[in-house]
Image (cartoon, rainbow, N blue to C red; front, side, top):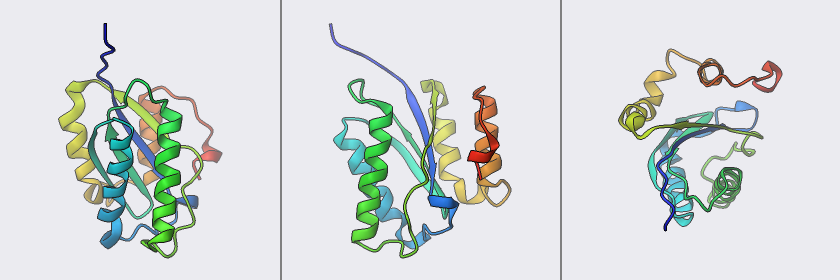
Length: 148
């Protein structure tokens, strides 16, 4: 018998101290690189997008890959390429930690649209407010001091 899974993860993480350093013109290069990392983990990227201070990834996760290792590899390897290629001169790294939220396949199209519209969305909602809303929606206890 084989292993079959169908779990969508929305993974969110921000730049160190949530600095607005992910310049729009080089984000496509970053996103393409992250897609490669995800692909190397035999996982599927449905959508990636972000703004100056954070990114959203909608992905499946291969059953043999631990979520923490997956996110760590994305963050470490993307940090290296950002610095090597000088994609974002002010980039100092990713903030410690991340959010990972699971969804059923029924939510896929809605999440893809949501991730595509990040630029418009964040004209109305701050990253911290968005993140707190997700944590509350998923009934995750959190300490506010770690959000700022």
